[in-house]
Image (tube, rainbow, N blue to C red; front, side, top):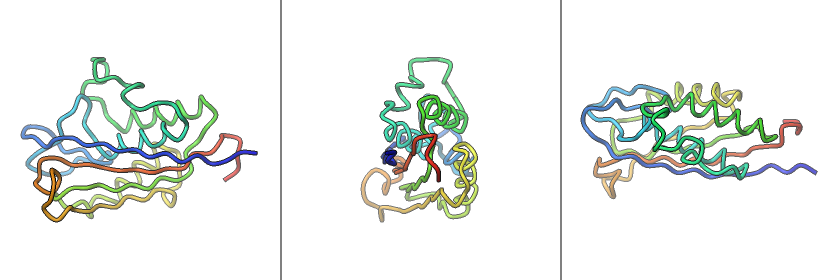
Length: 164
């Protein structure tokens, strides 16, 4: 009998001057961007880790090490599509994804529909199987102070031959 598997992913990056702010594959106008080896897209990194975790295939650091210059400045949507390929190569497929972005600023609401569409496309899912939400921490902690942005994601993956 095939059983769905659940995965959880979490990522955080520091906000700095001089970088683009990429979240969910969307270039968000803001005075700061996220620091990282790739494009530092916290949302897509959390989704990737959730998918890999559900299939017990490690994490994005294992697949795309930050010591490898090939991934410097990498587009995290491309990396997410590679994660989905890795799942397929191991007999799994994404089924459902739910995410939360934690950021004091900027407001994410205007960009959420595009983020959902980007994730759905990279994961070969209907958009109705992808949820993206955003919240602040009401001025508390590193995200509330504007030092960084975090994201959580949970997902369900199924065996490739299992019907939806």
